[in-house]
Length: 109
Image (tube, rainbow, N blue to C red):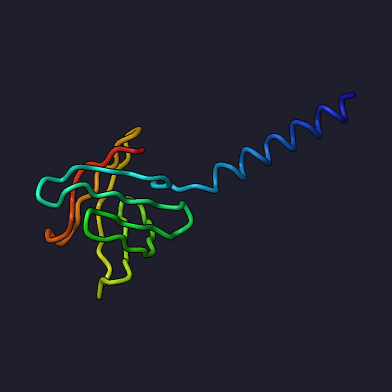
């Protein structure tokens, strides 16, 4: 019985550790009404692929995270954009570092 219980606890611990490493802080879909830019929706798959969608287009791309820095490269962008970001519960704040990109606070859907 003790052996069975020990094996069960080890299996549960391994599953917990595997689940913790499978997602990043941005995984999910985030949306915001950003005035003149309209509704912007970002989707992050937790594995480095993303989409950005507004009323005019939907673009796929890739992303990486390094600390509080998010680097995004969408298919039609000539260069990647880097954002300083933070997640607080169901709020994602993204500030594009060059000052020219889309910045705002997004709500998790």
